[in-house]
Amino acid sequence: MSHNSISTLTTKQMCSKSLAELQFTNNLLGILWKERDGSYKTLFTNLTNLTILDISHNNIGKIPDDVYGYLPRNLTILRIGHNSLTDFKWDKLKCFNQLQILDLSFNSLSNVTVITSNVTLTFLDLSYNHIFHLDNGFLKGAKSLMTLSLSYNKLTIINQSTFQSRSDSQLQTLFLWRNPFQCTCDSLDFILWIENSYLKIPRLTTKVMCDTPANKKGEALINFDINQCVNDSEAFLIYILTNSFITVFMFVATVAHLFYWDASYVLHYMKARLKGYRSLNSLEGVYDVFVTYDTKDPHVSEWVMRNLRVKLEEEGEKHLPLCLEERDWLPGVPLVDNLTHSIRYSRKTLFVLTEGYVKTGVFKLAMYLAHQRLLDENVDVIVLLMLEPVLQNSHFLRLRRRLCGKSVVEWPRTAAAEPWFWQNLRNVVRVDNQVLYSKTYSTYFNSK
Image (cartoon, rainbow, N blue to C red):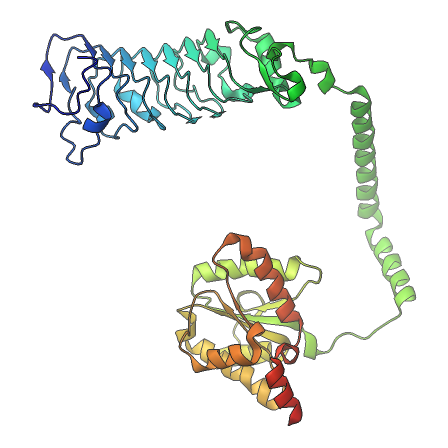
């Protein structure tokens, strides 16, 4: 039935109990399988005695997932070459218990994942594709495979762990013709594997060539001088550095264990002699920032503890000690007392706003107490972090943006803007809000 450009059939299924081989090449099976009604998905199902199926040259861009299950189970040879496949469901091969030859040449496959299902393949043709990467141990389930063709692909480096060990594999012949191999020290393990391998690699010296770097282009991969990857002087230098590091580490560890308190005392004594003594900070500066957020939302709590806390306390030029409810509040103390104490003894109060938090009484109470400091002490401590777009119609938020727009920061929608966001947040919480007021408001405030 080849060379007919078949794009439609009067019957939706072929039926035969005796047909053993079907040549269905140079047709338009890709169009038949693209129909939305799926009526041609069972086209070959009733060919119960079919062992050889050739559907090459059929303009197949993708094989629908359920078509694999409708192909005859007795297939020993399946040819799907000269199509436009960009993906192949390797786990579906478990449906074919007798399949020995699979031809996927002349397609557009770019990546080959691990074949985990146990298959009976003895020959696999992946030549003339766009494969640039092979997963480590990708032939894990193809233990009976004897011949593999990877010729005319885009492989630059093959890791030694890509193929199974001799005890776990029966692979005998490997075709690697015309791949743009990279002849650098990164390929050293693969070259050593080739030299010590039991596999037969046809035309290894004539068709398995280097493509990069430019001075190695056209040379046989197997002729790459591995001695240039082993530098005696560098190896000796690394040896000296490694031994020095181990010696110093052991010495420091021993001294620290035996004389830690003595060394600590001497260090602090010398530091005090150089810089002089100074009194401890009063309670006015216990915390730099009090962070109030929705502690009942696990996602918000996790974000605050694993992201916000790390970025403000552990990273940046100046570490900012935070006051966090889940970490620093005294258990058993009333909520109002904890809120009052945290806002009173923190230089700034950072509100992490979400849709659920702005509706709670804790948010309203914390906002009231923060404004109370503005009335009592003439100190503006409020910083709003919009983790979600909330209070869009709030007059307070609009006024806040107008008077002190830099004290309102929003979580960016793109990952590329996150470093800028964190730096901007650090700057906002370090600087007094009065400095951030708009010039118009500052002029009016000073005139009063």
